[in-house]
Image (cartoon, rainbow, N blue to C red; front, top):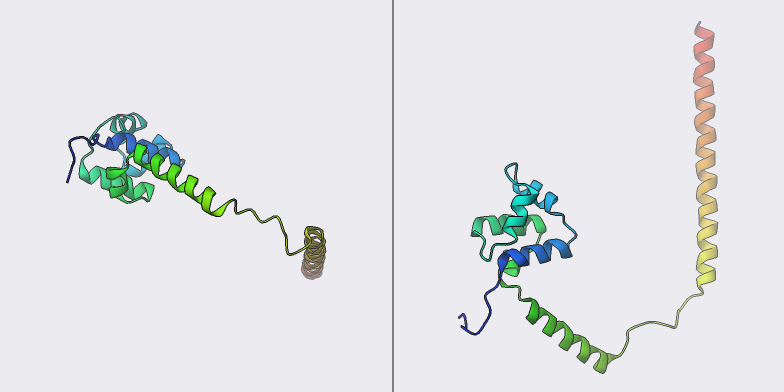
Length: 145
């Protein structure tokens, strides 16, 4: 049920918000929509208060979001929810930062250096074997001529 006091959702603006949040350029969205779409046409689409359902479905599929999310997204309500959930999470739980490591970071770093050295030695050995094989093949070809 739509309340007369509720502001009308601007679907074009919502497409723009989702597109920007996902880091998708207008050109990329236009390319996904088809050959007859351009950046300018996407810009005009984002200015429309209501978008044709078929086009909205296509846009939602390209952005990989539900079409209903675009149809019903209300920025003020989202900000309200984020603020209330953040405020209550901070009051109830406090920060969730782990200051007490269960390992010594220097030990982990030393282990990685050792592993890198082993990998380098294996790579070097593989290259030596490859060179030896190529030299053997070349020597065989020289004998034939």
